[in-house]
Length: 144
Ligand code: ZN
Image 1 (tube, protein in one colour):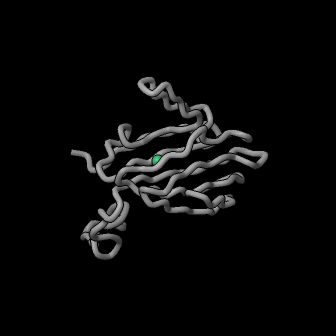
Image 2 (spheres, rainbow, N blue to C red):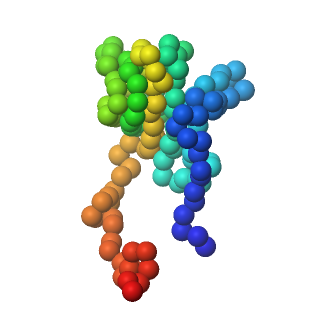
C-alpha cells in the first residue's frame, strides 16, 4: 500500500476557474477546490480558494464542531468574524472557532488566494515532536 495520496491541482493562477456546486442547497462557490475527497483525507478538510476582485461570500457561516484556519497567500481582502472586520493580505493567518460567524471578500485589485484547513476543534493530540519519529531510512536513498 502506498503511504501517500497526491492530487496535482491546477496552478494557483487557475484556482479561480474551480467551482464547488451544492445543488441540494442551490449554492455554488466560485474559486473553491476541496481536497478531502481527492486526497482521501481523514483528519481535516482543505480547500484552495481564489476570489476575483469584488467577489466575496454571499452569507456568513459557522460550524458545528470544526475550527477553520485561513492562510492568505495573495491579494487583499476583509475577513469578518462576528462583529469584527479584519483586513487580510499575503501572510495573514486566521483561526476561527466553530461558533465564529464568518465571511470574507476581496477588496483589492488582484485575486485573493487562500487555503482553508478545517478540523475538529480540540481533536489534536500529539503533534510535531510528540508525534513525529525519526526513522532509519536515508533521505533520497543511500549516499554513494
Ligand atoms: Zn467553513
